[in-house]
Image: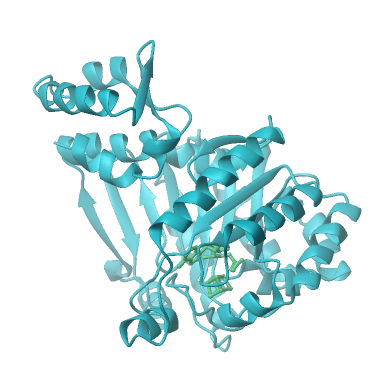
Length: 375
Ligand SMILES: C[S@@+](CC[C@H](N)C(=O)[O-])C[C@H]1O[C@@H](n2cnc3c(N)ncnc32)[C@H](O)[C@@H]1O
Ligand code: SF4
């Protein structure tokens, strides 16, 4: 079982915090779709004949595509790959794109999971983020999607900006729960160097908020969402039973995937490759049939081990000690056991059977803990 990721590198406007690969000029959209169709065909054997369990349109903003664009992409995928008839097909959408007409298109295309980027329930904060929608538009887009029969909906929220405090974060969580969606992704605002926000922080035009406040919001979120039957199956991802993202869960479980489009990454168990993060060059190289549109690295055993630690530690499935012992050089075990003892004493991790997972306090330091366990 494998997944297909398709990166749509266009957005109507640039959000001040966002460092993903996108262009705000849509003039190359048709040429880019053509190049994507070429790449889909060219790489049809990348996953051998593995069954495709998930297709994920991410971005950028896939909801800027026309019905015909998405149709053409799906058509060639169905033709060239072995797609399961019950595949999860997700499309990331911005609220301002979700008109009734657009939602009908997505239904016709048999998109069965929508990821809607709400980010915030405050107009002031949305404006500061340079989002293209109001809070009211966000909420109504979710309701419209539900009215059109979309059940499997996830929303994205961001906390930890200068506008957020524990009181308004509680109210945002209440609003998110009231929207009656079965999945919520909530990210702590990261300051990315090459963004408007990164620039403003560098020149002290903006001040970061205390880590302590963000941590308080994170713990509050876990408690509130758990009380409302959401399961935290990954640090930033909460779902009702039966609504985990299969696509993202497969990334975290180390399953194979093919990433298509500029900046997309692929993994086949042995190597990792990533496409060029430049729309014009991506189009040019694919049209020329030049392999220069991607770079590739073969993963060493240490790479694979560290990656397993990093990804699995963030999830509800945790690190499987039997898997570690059976799959990797036994000499890695001594570093692991030494660090594990410390982490257990500090109550940052727990062990049940052969599975190591983070405690809530540990989740606040997930990346640091993972790096302590690396070889
Ligand atoms: C790359 S965006 C694509 C989705 C869609 N274009 C949108 O804006 O809703 C995926 C998600 O990443 C999150 N994100 C992007 N940059 C972030 C940052 N610097 N800090 C925290 N979350 C971020 C946002 O919540 C966003 O919805
Ligand atoms: S958050 Fe979404 S809409 Fe905003 S710039 Fe990033 S990808 Fe585009």
